[in-house]
Image 1: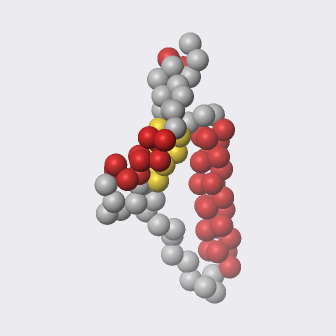
Image 2: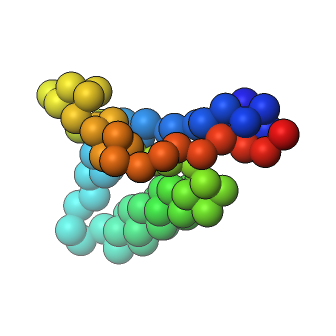
Length: 78
């Protein structure tokens, strides 16, 4: 889609972090790696010029997309 000069937006729907017991050091490490992977994905998308917004449960989609109204969403190049 982006290659055809269509603007692209990714809507992230956070479901919360996995629950880890405080004494579970391996679980805590896995959680940190999981969070780092999500951050890396967001970064990779934004580096490619793809807008990423978070949609919080209970909010309307309009609230998630509102910040995009202030900027131009760029598409790819033809």
